[in-house]
Image (cartoon, helix red, strand yellow):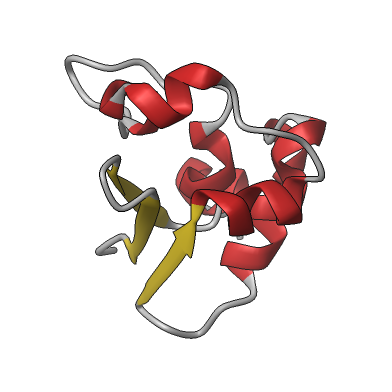
Length: 100
């Protein structure tokens, strides 16, 4: 039986750019519905420094919708069935499990 495209896409972490795969793996393996990470924790996972827009523009963390196309980095949480919401003042990101 053929699976829906969305279910197939979730199983294809290759859609996640290589530099963001560690974040995808971390989020995908968490059972909690909400995972909050500091920018520093995300950088530790990735092994790279987040670009300046990640620290200064909430749009960098935007989830794809009618106003925002999927960005390279957003694939890391989308493929883990999460949405992201940044708190730039606190330097944290809350990753919520997306409703199925």
